[in-house]
Length: 106
Image (cartoon, rainbow, N blue to C red; front, side):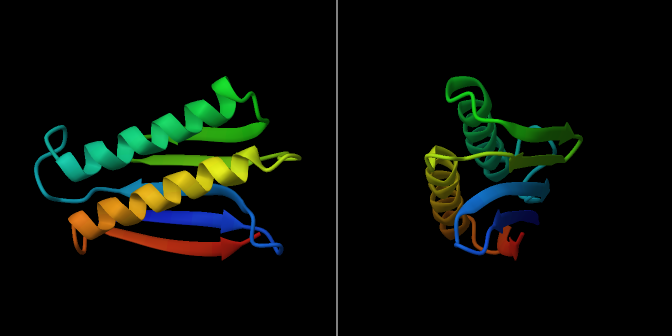
């Protein structure tokens, strides 16, 4: 199962995420659910850090990606993360029982 943990602050703004796991629909490298999630996550992370130049701590390990905004004065990061969250809900609907989305207050 893919686990998507989103971090939000006390004002309900999204501050980051940690994505781990494998959907288990097919072998590694051929799983369309994993590919969908990976692509969406990498697009979001690269948009936050490269296109928008927002300060964030980002770590990529085997089977895990973590991103936490350090500063988000104008709310761009929150909106980009909301887009990722929304997309993951759509993917979750398509691949029932393969993605678990949770929230942690930071």
